Length: 345
Image (cartoon, rainbow, N blue to C red; front, top):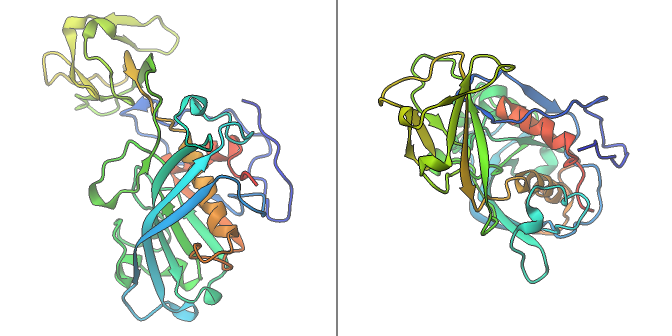
């Protein structure tokens, strides 16, 4: 996909001069990914007027003060936990390249709906904040910014001042936002989740790769749910170098554990280090995962620009920044490459 042109303006700070082709984020299961951290000093959105079929409502489930004496000149903070609901026009130029969005179910207005978790830390008095919203891309559902900027504990449950570490971001007046963007995350430990539409009746072969780098890799987790665990419909191959011809692993030498994982036989046999495995298998009814990008775009746009009382940050945000580490950094790279730092307005 060629880079998409951006609307220029005083808030838009280019992140890449020559953007490389994005690398798939999670194709190599079981590997240790190089640390990749991006901080965008603008960037999340280029346009500043009105919204079209983006966030339709925010449901606040809890609004609670952060216990403690406050944070310097910024004062007291509060936490807002809830869900947001959105809809997308599949024909809009900024949405049409989302894979399978044209096949997703639509509402009466012809739009595709989704919903996701949100978690927001903000000054109680927004006039004492610094006007910046820091969007921390969750890593497999988990919050990272507090531990990485504030030297705080690695927890998703932020209730008191001690949970916010040394309070660096708060003393400097940042509002900090998390939201769900990846569907395949369990509900444990307060992980941030998103609910996406799926494409009914679609079944195709997909493939995953595994490159083990530890000696006890016994399970090959699949990126998608297998629509059939009939081994005659799947194929496992292996090779020791990228450029060599893959060798078929006999069906008697592996098995499905369930519809989300396989293993070698006999049970307990580890996948050897340095051998690249590829597994081809059928999957059906895929979720429209690319909506996660649009959900981030539209939530940040709503919180930054919406002036109504439904926006808990109304009038208090002048700029938006994004932070990501490892998987989350790769998310931001692809987010920018694919043009999601421009909203639908």
